[in-house]
Length: 461
Image (tube, rainbow, N blue to C red; front, top):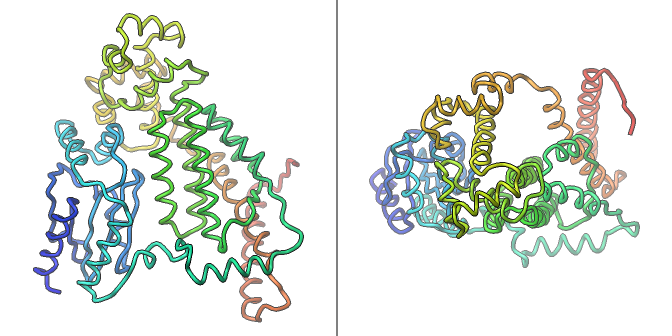
């Protein structure tokens, strides 16, 4: 196809879908079409990952659970997105604008424009790009070619695999140990106990959830879906807004279905549990709140990047300003104004620690009147300036790195044990035997090096 043909195709699908479309040639933007005007294109944050994709049709899901779909033709990338199936929360869009460095005066236009983009299911967007691929590359692809055929319950290979499991299943079934672990994690989420989660991860046992699918990837996905469903409900019981919790659950499940690597699914698993635990922790603010405190905390979290007033909170709860102030102070043990201020400073601390945004940008994002206003309030609460806090918290923390390593080791061990139990070692080929021995030697070498670096200390069980 010629360049003009591709531009025509981009314009047509952009008008049809109501979603921005771009055309890249060897990583350079050469054409774009959108019925929505965006002050800053959100694809900037994802462009490097998107342009590294070389499949004829693929999709990419962001940390905000937006998705982009990509079709390639020769040296060209056609990229449509972002879209999603559920409506954006105001706070999510403001956080996105913050990460994109959208100028303060353009933030509201960015929020409004993003909400005007048509919401479309990921499957529909993929099917649209399959059509584009057929026009551009004369190749017929269907949805299952992109997201995997095992999702089709009537797929012949899956039927055969399930039959094999039934025929070859051992008489001594593996004992499930998930109930106690599951109850522990769900209680941590319900209480918003981040410290307990970190302790649990440091000593996490190997999980044996039983066989739920014919292959390891589908097994990991199924386990994730079960966990996120339970985690969202635990978060709701902990006080998280129902709609926010369920929307996050839907988004996490959509992302899980696009991941084709068990290790990345494990990382997403921990990210999901941490997300719900942190949200409940912020809502409960370190203690079990009353319904009023929880409702106020949910409102503050949803409007964290705005200049929140007592009148606005009172209107949202259908209460008078005076009645709300008195009740909240009595039930929370802190004034409403102080609570709002503390929540904003907690978010400022997180942004200072985990982003490179300037103090001025963080101040504007959190609704402070100026950088000096944020600095003054920040020092009143923490005893440090924002710059001092950032410097202190960014010092290297080896224990945190070890905790990350400990998170993955139980999964490796459990996977190796489960697969090894199914292997008939007397029947494997010499080539497979050599590969296995080589991998085991590498694993042994890594283990020995880690033990040497750790000083060989064993603290017992």
